[in-house]
Amino acid sequence: MFAIATWGQPPRLSREGEAERCRRGKLLCAEWNVEERRFSALQQLGSLPVLADNGSVKATLQAINKMQADGVIGQYAIGGAVGATFYLEPAATVDLDVFIIYPGESTGPLVSLAPVYEHLKTRGGRVQDEYIVIGEWPVQFLLPADDLEREAIAQAVETAVDGVPTRVMTAEHLVAIALRVGRVKDHNRILQFLEQEAVDQERLRGILERHRLASKWREFERRYLEGRQ
Image 1 (cartoon, rainbow, N blue to C red):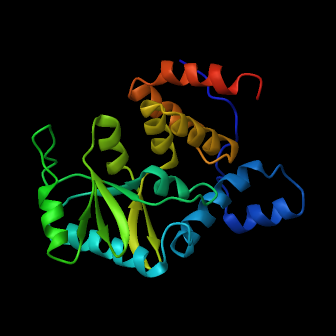
Image 2: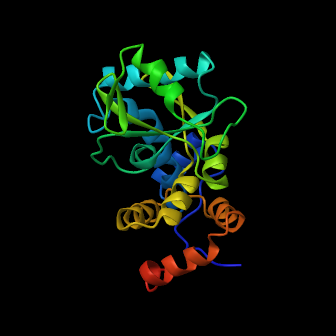
């Protein structure tokens, strides 16, 4: 077993009731603020200019949803920096990472993204390096590299952006993936999640244990979190 530094837990009472009590100063507000920031981010993402203009956001997500409806892809989930923006304060980012599973969950080193690219190119998408540009937004489609990413896709949160339904990885899966990748910018993103109290710690603990990342988390805590609790 291992410990996760205490940064707050999500609320369990009604939004309206907790907000009112918080405003009146009758309880500690940390728990309420975790979920309120998460709720606000999910509601406001479609209007964030740092991601793309509203038309690009809508056109991109509609194209991805149409591809799913046509059976080209199965489940999908937004991850990476844009996925994190659903939960954190907005930050400038250029491209969209979309993790996909093909119908029948075809995976492996021989599985190609060619069907995705061919489908989108016939509908106005254009290839730019490792991206395909949809509605002026560079999108990188990624197949799951391991069971952690497959789980992150399967358990993604359903939401809507500018009226268009979509799916985004949970904050806890985003943190676990960032921990596994382990670059400096990934560690910085984890710290943002913790400092903004955007993760459910019990859920994160379960994910880290399930995917054998507990020791890596302990190392991260020693490096970044000791003395901050």
